[in-house]
Image 1: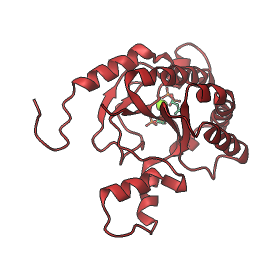
Image 2: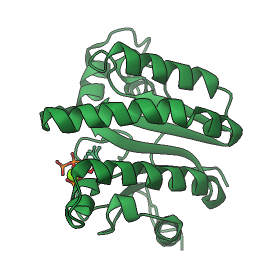
Image 3: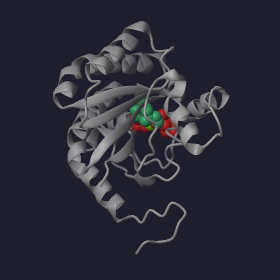
Length: 231
Ligand code: IPE
Ligand code: IPE
Ligand code: MG
């Protein structure tokens, strides 16, 4: 059985914090812990690619202080997790635009990508300043597809969105925490046949039992890809 590509919209950090009388930044800190747990648990559940939505291109609309706090958190994640990712044999890639992130963060991202480049157990793709519509639009306007335009060729272009080399493989299962049931511009092309799984659990509370439940339900789904039922 080939490995699963699971995508996660890590939502609900702010509400988790507000419910506890804490600032939203405390929710984002809790979110980093949940990401750590999920990365650690993923391989045992058959996941070989994990794409997680950390910051959308539309999240720039948030108050400056929250945005700055998130960017600082991404820097500390890149530096603080580097060693742990290496020893867990995890390869980290960042997808999305980099030109608006600031040189310090981009440097930290590149250093962590380089340090983890040979990781073979899990490919962790962190989406920062990411928009699926922008990635698709970018692919559409960029020339250079030789020969006929096939889905595979477009997929490779979309996956390399904004000039970054990255696998654009199809998502098997998309998880969204926090109770909302929408995609919020995440991996629109790659989720064409993804199974969708929504939970009201807020992201900082998400743990391995939740992941196990999502995978278990995914395994019971009948994926037909436009064909007919196999059972
Ligand atoms: C998701 O949690 C994290 C980011 C978007 C960066 P939110 O910050 O959206 O939390 P809620 O949805 O407001 O609770
Ligand atoms: C999507 O969550 C982006 C991330 C989880 C990083 P949002 O909280 O920004 O999405 P909306 O605004 O509820 O659609
Ligand atoms: Mg949200």
